[in-house]
Amino acid sequence: MVRITTLDEFEKAFREGLGAPLPGRPWRAVSDEWLWRFSEGAGDYNPRFREVVASPAFLFSIEFGANAAIWGHIPQENISTSDLTMLYLGSRIEWHRQIWPGDRVRGIETPESIKRVTMSQIGEACVCTGRTEYWNSRGEQIATMHTDMLRFANPGQGVSSTREPGPRIAPDPLVWERVRRGSELLYHQDVRTGDPMPELPRGTYTTTELYLFAHAALSPHRSRYVEAGAIDLGAGGRADPDYARSNRAQAASFDYGPQRICWLIQAVTDWMGDHGTLLRLDARLRRPNLVGDTNTVRGAVSRIDGGEIQVELENVNQAGVVTATGLATVRLPARGASLGPSFPEVAEHRPGLYG
Image 1 (cartoon, rainbow, N blue to C red):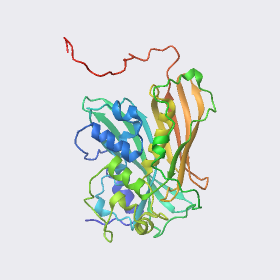
Image 2: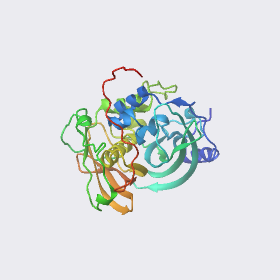
Image 3: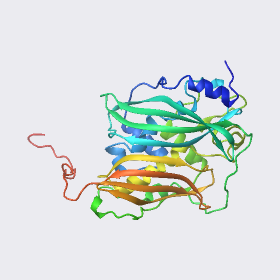
């Protein structure tokens, strides 16, 4: 094992694997149980997503999409976060088609680039970018995701963050109280620049919310590798406040970056309804989201280009601090356009002469 302890060593080793895909998971079938488990973990119980088509956020359950940006082709055991830690910066996602129950799917991750930057709080760092292509077994590309990770020398303590007291709000009931458009039509002719979206309150971020996302939305599996000095890397060690401070440069237990991206996706898909299509999302993480923070997602229409609508999104904590932003592009139907067949309601089956 070659221990990598400096940014120079890391950058050299990371560059050696640029452009080469990582070994990935095998094909997996999208089952009702898998969709249900993702819904539990993400707190997204939109019936359209559970029963007919997967949420756009379901990509994170197929493949986390960050390994190529975190490690590249460097063996994980060659780097300790006690030397070089990391932060999730955001993802740029483009969806090409929907995911249906029964599809066999997989993701292919490829490290794309690495560059040096200097940041006010942490000094010199590397921004690593990886590309994940999501495919079904028919050879159809589902989506493309570009993920940015920050790699930097571990300061040995949590970087400063805004922690102000705020309301404590139970998150579980909120997932049932969300405002969903559902099958109600929203035509692009009825949308105006500046129109606000319904707010998506997420309540107070709890350890349960962290573990639900980690082990239901992402993966229920145990970790094969645990860093020296740690005994529990469940949820990537995020639930352990001491590990979060010493190894991940966070002030307390903290979330997965994609968890907030899922919230942004939920807010815009709730607003656009079943007949809208989420085309693209550029999501940026600006501050940590810590256990105990109370979060709300809000957004507004920022641009209209025919049937394509741009929506600016943000996640705000109890201190009024914006911890994540997103720019989503949605396609809405035109008034008078054909929306496909309209099926009658399902009634009780009463066998007759022909079945």
